Image 1: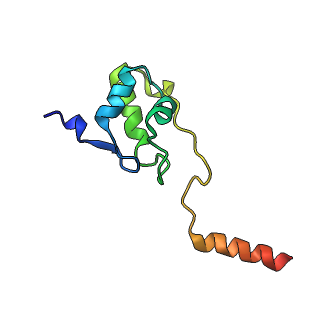
Image 2 (image 1 turned 180 degrees about the horizontal axis):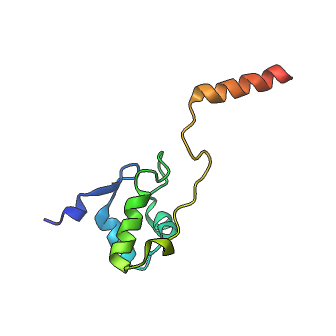
Image 3 (image 1 turned 60 degrees about the vertical axis):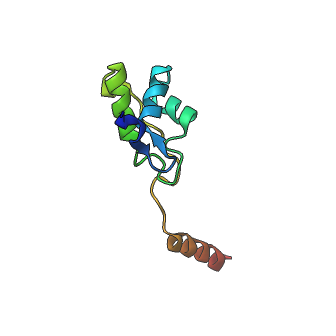
Length: 97
């Protein structure tokens, strides 16, 4: 049995290594291409859990050097923000009025 079919790379979107390898072989050879095609990095972790694995797969299959592979861009918020922080900001805005 091929373990790539069962190895989950993106837990948020439930995407396997086999799916990513297949996409790379079809010509999706950048993290952005793969993200647009399969949706890894679009879940709650925003790629913090899978981006490096995707880059490693691209390197392994294409032979490209790490510096030639642009990472996924960060989208705000780049780190999780506790609700209490947002609530405090809102409270400060209300008090300024």
